[in-house]
Image (cartoon, rainbow, N blue to C red; front, side, top):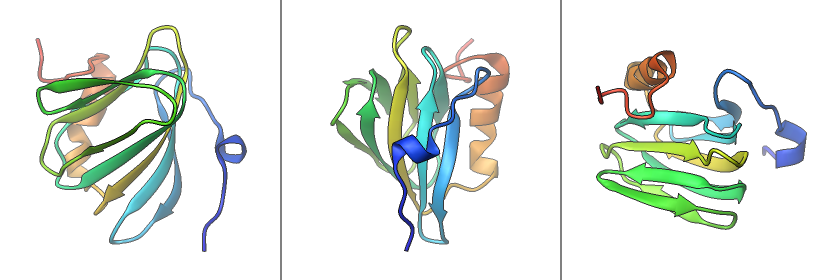
Length: 126
Protein backbone atom coordinates (compact mmCIF):
# COMPACT_ATOMS: atom_id res chain seq x y z
CA UNK A 1 0.00 0.00 0.00
CA UNK A 2 1.07 3.57 -0.70
CA UNK A 3 -0.35 6.47 1.30
CA UNK A 4 0.60 10.15 1.26
CA UNK A 5 -0.91 13.64 1.07
CA UNK A 6 -0.33 16.84 -0.87
CA UNK A 7 1.31 18.60 2.10
CA UNK A 8 3.85 15.80 2.55
CA UNK A 9 4.79 15.70 -1.14
CA UNK A 10 4.58 19.44 -1.94
CA UNK A 11 7.60 20.61 -3.92
CA UNK A 12 7.63 23.43 -6.45
CA UNK A 13 10.30 24.08 -9.09
CA UNK A 14 10.91 27.63 -10.36
CA UNK A 15 11.90 26.32 -13.81
CA UNK A 16 9.01 23.95 -14.66
CA UNK A 17 6.06 22.03 -13.24
CA UNK A 18 7.04 19.36 -10.73
CA UNK A 19 5.52 15.89 -10.89
CA UNK A 20 6.18 14.01 -7.67
CA UNK A 21 5.74 10.31 -8.36
CA UNK A 22 3.65 8.62 -5.69
CA UNK A 23 3.26 5.19 -7.31
CA UNK A 24 4.17 3.43 -10.54
CA UNK A 25 3.48 -0.03 -11.91
CA UNK A 26 3.17 -1.51 -15.39
CA UNK A 27 -0.54 -0.66 -15.22
CA UNK A 28 -0.59 2.94 -13.91
CA UNK A 29 1.38 5.91 -12.69
CA UNK A 30 0.23 8.30 -9.95
CA UNK A 31 1.75 11.75 -9.42
CA UNK A 32 1.07 14.90 -7.46
CA UNK A 33 1.62 17.81 -9.82
CA UNK A 34 2.79 21.18 -8.54
CA UNK A 35 2.67 24.19 -10.89
CA UNK A 36 3.84 27.73 -10.22
CA UNK A 37 1.66 30.39 -11.92
CA UNK A 38 1.83 29.96 -15.70
CA UNK A 39 3.68 26.63 -15.60
CA UNK A 40 2.37 23.75 -17.69
CA UNK A 41 2.63 20.20 -18.93
CA UNK A 42 2.96 20.73 -22.69
CA UNK A 43 0.41 19.27 -25.06
CA UNK A 44 1.19 15.68 -26.04
CA UNK A 45 -0.83 12.58 -26.97
CA UNK A 46 0.45 9.45 -25.23
CA UNK A 47 -1.28 6.09 -25.51
CA UNK A 48 -2.61 6.25 -21.95
CA UNK A 49 -5.74 7.59 -20.31
CA UNK A 50 -5.29 10.30 -17.70
CA UNK A 51 -7.55 11.30 -14.81
CA UNK A 52 -6.85 14.68 -13.22
CA UNK A 53 -8.24 15.84 -9.89
CA UNK A 54 -7.60 19.49 -8.98
CA UNK A 55 -6.55 19.84 -5.36
CA UNK A 56 -5.99 23.61 -5.30
CA UNK A 57 -5.54 26.56 -7.62
CA UNK A 58 -6.93 27.25 -11.08
CA UNK A 59 -5.89 26.60 -14.63
CA UNK A 60 -6.94 24.79 -17.77
CA UNK A 61 -6.82 21.34 -19.27
CA UNK A 62 -6.59 20.82 -23.02
CA UNK A 63 -8.27 17.69 -24.31
CA UNK A 64 -8.23 17.44 -28.10
CA UNK A 65 -9.53 20.74 -29.48
CA UNK A 66 -11.32 21.63 -26.23
CA UNK A 67 -10.00 23.60 -23.26
CA UNK A 68 -11.66 23.29 -19.86
CA UNK A 69 -11.11 25.79 -17.04
CA UNK A 70 -10.31 23.92 -13.83
CA UNK A 71 -10.65 24.73 -10.14
CA UNK A 72 -10.49 22.83 -6.84
CA UNK A 73 -12.64 19.71 -6.80
CA UNK A 74 -12.78 19.32 -10.59
CA UNK A 75 -12.10 15.93 -12.15
CA UNK A 76 -11.14 15.75 -15.84
CA UNK A 77 -10.44 12.59 -17.84
CA UNK A 78 -8.71 12.61 -21.22
CA UNK A 79 -8.63 9.41 -23.25
CA UNK A 80 -5.49 7.80 -24.67
CA UNK A 81 -4.21 9.17 -27.96
CA UNK A 82 -5.89 12.56 -27.44
CA UNK A 83 -3.81 15.75 -27.39
CA UNK A 84 -3.68 16.94 -23.80
CA UNK A 85 -1.91 19.41 -21.57
CA UNK A 86 -2.38 21.20 -18.25
CA UNK A 87 -1.58 24.83 -17.48
CA UNK A 88 -1.81 26.87 -14.27
CA UNK A 89 -3.41 30.28 -14.53
CA UNK A 90 -0.97 33.21 -14.54
CA UNK A 91 -2.11 34.30 -11.08
CA UNK A 92 -2.44 30.96 -9.30
CA UNK A 93 -0.38 28.03 -8.16
CA UNK A 94 -2.00 24.75 -9.20
CA UNK A 95 -1.89 21.40 -7.43
CA UNK A 96 -3.39 18.35 -9.11
CA UNK A 97 -3.49 14.60 -8.66
CA UNK A 98 -2.86 12.75 -11.95
CA UNK A 99 -3.35 9.06 -12.69
CA UNK A 100 -2.20 7.69 -16.06
CA UNK A 101 -2.98 4.17 -17.20
CA UNK A 102 -0.84 2.64 -18.49
CA UNK A 103 2.16 4.89 -17.77
CA UNK A 104 3.34 6.84 -20.84
CA UNK A 105 6.60 5.73 -22.38
CA UNK A 106 9.71 7.88 -22.27
CA UNK A 107 9.41 8.46 -26.04
CA UNK A 108 5.80 9.65 -25.61
CA UNK A 109 7.11 12.40 -23.35
CA UNK A 110 9.43 13.85 -26.01
CA UNK A 111 6.83 16.57 -26.82
CA UNK A 112 6.71 17.42 -23.10
CA UNK A 113 10.48 17.91 -22.97
CA UNK A 114 10.39 19.90 -26.25
CA UNK A 115 7.58 22.13 -25.00
CA UNK A 116 9.43 22.88 -21.77
CA UNK A 117 12.63 23.59 -23.67
CA UNK A 118 10.82 25.95 -26.07
CA UNK A 119 8.59 27.33 -23.28
CA UNK A 120 5.53 26.42 -25.37
CA UNK A 121 2.32 24.96 -23.99
CA UNK A 122 1.68 23.46 -27.45
CA UNK A 123 5.14 22.58 -28.84
CA UNK A 124 3.66 21.95 -32.30
CA UNK A 125 2.59 25.58 -32.65
CA UNK A 126 4.85 28.11 -34.32
